[in-house]
Image 1 (cartoon, helix red, strand yellow):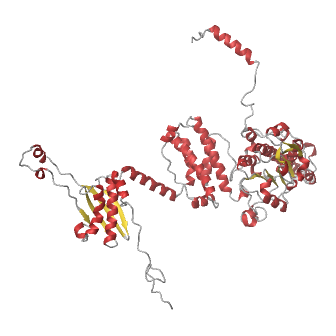
Image 2 (spheres, chains in turn purple, cyan):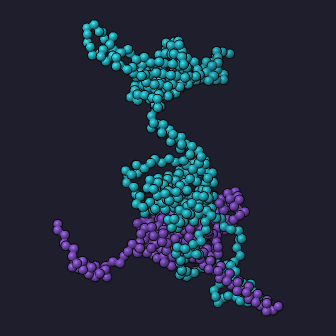
Image 3 (tube, chains in turn green, brown):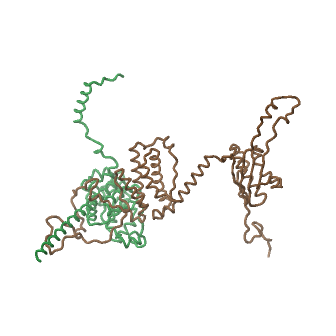
Length: 262
Length: 376
């Protein structure tokens, strides 16, 4: 096959064609394209979480209808293919409520524990706790029974050094951590978590009805909560600065009026 | 993990200009200082849950600033003065272990990224096979439990060791590719998990491998083998008998006169010397059965007269000592001529006879002998 000669004319023609065609067609780039790791590495802010994102993650799939907990009925949309479909229009405001809670707790220097005791949740909880800085903790393997109620035995030296009661615990799979939920209730620690259709929503204080078996749903929800927590930590930093500025001004004023008086 | 390792990891990550996961004793200052990216704007409307409205809220907007000297300044709600636990895995009660896992995983991905940037990963299979073998000196489970300050189960230990092995492979690739910076960075991290015992075990393995590669014979062509039977131990050196120089016999062999008989021209059969404790075998073992035991391996292998045998034997009686020497001689034959191994194995001469004198038991006269049974 003989190739066309690469002349100036050919080059000009090619350039014209390319500049013309560049104005049309797809503007999709790699940066704009969704990739599967984005739910983990690019978490959504609470205001940017959409119904379609939750549906894409499969957050609306509940368990089989026969396994539905009767107390879950208010959050179910209906049934399809033998599965309970979770009403995501209720999930979204409840998720935002939980995000506000996390933000408020973080802003008041509260500690938040992310609990996800399945192998596919390890990355999620680690990154979520990282976003909260020193205020974020994670438990990925097993909640040690007595971590809160028997802390003098489990954490002997640390119980005198640090404040051990967390201010909020987030459960990504609450049904597998009923011991932990019970301990939090005994110790009056607020809880929030992903409630599937086979769970009673009353086990946690702020339920988020969604599919707890889907790792992508857990990534979205933990991402939203941790982003809100990060906002809270930042707001606290700004508040601290403002308070210090205020206190400084008052000191100066005191010094000036004191000098004026004397 | 040693503090040295933590700092090394910091330097490692900074070299590769990557973000660190937050671990034991780190504080993520980049939240408020915003090193990599500016913090995200507070664009979501704050909707407090019902219970929070009763709490003191921090209202520090500009129009609410109180400039009255008498009233105290707004301050955040007084909280518990104690600090929070430092490690993110504190509530697992094995914080150093889980932090180490996170750190090792991060180090592994960073080093893999660095190797990929240098086009050293993924390696083709022939290159992987050609890599020098791994020579790990990792601490054992008990020592690792001390290093990581947590009681380790077999599964937990295996998780750590698997990550360390992967890191060590990256280090080997970096070493082969003369990427010294990366190699040193990884070594700084992994050396915190090695122990003296592990290093000793590794050195033993290396020496054993070298000895195996060198071969069973020393520089003089001697084999040194050990045999045991009952309570006797025999150490045996075997060396090939020097073949006699047959320059004189060559012209004699060529002539074929009627008078010359075959016995005159053929060289004498080779004789070997067998010394046991510097004493010839015929003196040491007066019984022919014991002598037969010693010589049997050579007979079966067809090596009678091929080797000189020097044995030092200690312990036990005649049959124990002869059995021990026999085993050592069989092993020596295999060392010199590996092809005879199947013959000797089939004759069960390479097996250390495990029979030992059975102990006497209480209520019995001897090991098995019972006292006379009495009806009444």
